[in-house]
Length: 142
Image (cartoon, rainbow, N blue to C red; front, side, top):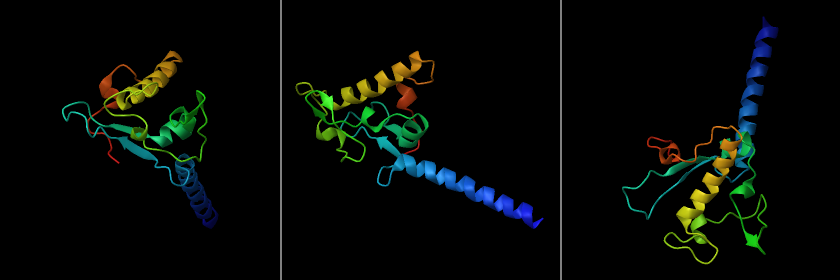
């Protein structure tokens, strides 16, 4: 009986350790596991803010950090994991594109939708043409 109880406790501990390790792997110290991409500054009756899971995209879907985070030099993304992450609106203006830098809303939509379209072509469930799939009401807010 003691052996069974000890084995159960050990398996439970290992299970919790794996869950915590996976969450930390996605979070990598200072990276939030989940974020809400707010729409502050836009007309209030537009679509809901977008809930984004670093855990699901990074750890579970194995999408590289620099698929979203970027710093361009000579038309090449030189951003690497561990580099500083600027708020998107520090480079992307909310209201207007500036040269090759698209406005904020367009930058989000291009990045997210193009990635989801590519995944959908592979037969994966990745909505890209239904606004409310990402701009859903009653999403977790972080």
